[in-house]
Amino acid sequence: MLRDTRVTPPPAGRAPPAAADPRLALRSALGRFATGVTVIAAQTADKHVHCMTVNSFASLSLDPPLILWTLRTQSARYQTFSKTEEFSVSVLAETQIDIARKHAAPPPEGFAHRGWKAYLKGCPIIEGASAHFICKGHTEVNKGDHVILVGEVTEFAEHHYPPLVFMGGKYYSSSSLKPL
Ligand SMILES: Cc1cc2nc3c(=O)[nH]c(=O)nc-3n(C[C@H](O)[C@H](O)[C@H](O)COP(=O)(O)O)c2cc1C
Image (cartoon, rainbow, N blue to C red; front, side):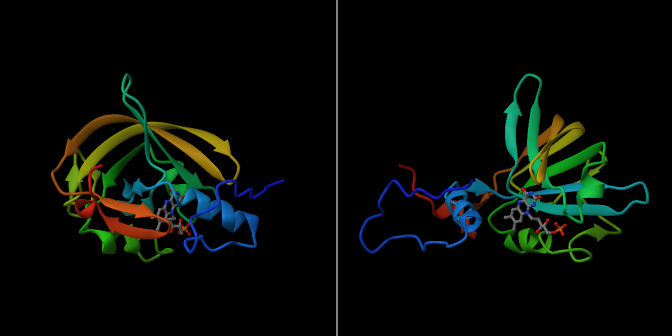
C-alpha cells in the first residue's frame, strides 16, 4: 500500500500542493530529485533514427564503463529501444529545451526520423549536446512498469555547453545555478 507520510512540515506559506492520489504524491516527491535531461537515440535496420527524452539516465560502473536508464514497458518506443544493440545518450545542453520537448512527444513527432545528419562512430547523436555516450549491448531487468536498460560505454565525448536541468516537472538552466 502506497502511503504519503509527510514527516517534514514545510515552512509556513511554502507547502507543496497536496496530491489526493498517492501516485501523484509519489511522483511529486520524486520530482524533488533534480536531474539532467538526455535524448537516447538508436538507428533501426531501415535507417530510421528513433529518439526519446529520458531523465532516468545514471552512471552505473566505471570499470567496466556502464550506464543505465529505465524505459516504460507501455511506451510506443519500447519495441525499438528494448531491442537495439547500440544506442547513444546525448546529455542535452541548456539551450536544447525544444529538443527535449520534441523527443518527449508521442510518435510520430520526435520519434522516427530519416536523413539524420549527426553521428558519432556510426551512431546517431544530438549535435550541440553537453556530452555524448555511445553504448553497446544491454541487459534488461523488468521491474514494475519499467525495464532497466544497461549499456556498456564504447565511446564518449564531453563538450563545454552548460547542461539542461529538470526538477519538479520544469526545465532549468544550469549556468544560473549558484555553487554553495
Ligand atoms: C524530462 C523527461 C524525462 C523523461 N524520462 C523518461 C524516462 O526516463 N523513461 C521513460 O520511459 N520515459 C521518459 N519520459 C517520457 C518519454 O520521453 C515520452 O514522453 C513518453 O515515453 C511518451 O511517449 P511514448 O508513447 O513513446 O511512451 C520522459 C519525459 C520527459 C519530458
